[in-house]
Image (cartoon, rainbow, N blue to C red; front, side, top):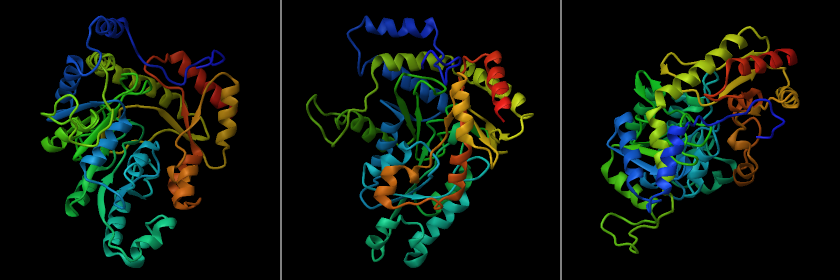
Length: 396
């Protein structure tokens, strides 16, 4: 972050407790695939309440391994959201699968279960009903083929769980795999149950702006023994249980999480409740101040979100307010702010590949035009939040 900024956009919350643990690992000969990754995974299993936790190099890598474990391959259809970080779609494209986008709930920004149900029903019918869900550039290719819907990939946006009960019912009714992208939602709860535990597989990520950080890294959680064994092999160049050092049962990847990252994550997990509470406090300060400022809307929570896990703090400017003007002027005053999210379907490579156009997903596009992430982290002070809100109020 440039020194011209008075307040950081985000910042990891680290203490000497974590720094000393990382330094201790550096004094050992084991910097990869040692005891620390095992202990980090054990801590995650205990917290989540799952049979398997698999440490990986990133949330993206974790989602990709879930796609592989689900048997998703070329031409398969996966229902997902266009309002997300691009990784949730990219992992499908890595396997040449086809993302089928469903527009989102205008309040939460999470994928709408009614849209999922409609998409599944229409795609199973085929013909004209199915065509409206397919990207323009592949409609003709699939017009005379059986369409294979393999999975649903919902995303827990901004730390709020998706509406999981109806999504689970749809997945079970149609025998679809369910991959829960909880990369933004560690610690969140839906009806008292932890995010990431509703699907066949769940994934968390630990980039420095997340609830805990490992620098780079992620964890897959699952109760599926066979899938867990496969994903452990795939993260380590396809080396399965029983393979010798240079044997490789599968075509795999280097998605390993190193020992320094693992010990950092383990120590951060010991502080997780503290970190979540601090983020909640910062969000509360924002909520108190922003509710009296005209021209903006704060994040609304679903009644089923029994615990929000604040990942970022995103406001929505009212229709008619120039979001980009506000962002530029905040930036000029030393306060960084970022549009959040830019719709996936309108990213240049998606337009080129699939022919998406503005208007295809109007709710996603509206949220993309109006969303603005303000500085947010667990180390922010009340004075800093006050400064952001006073500056924003003057601009509006």
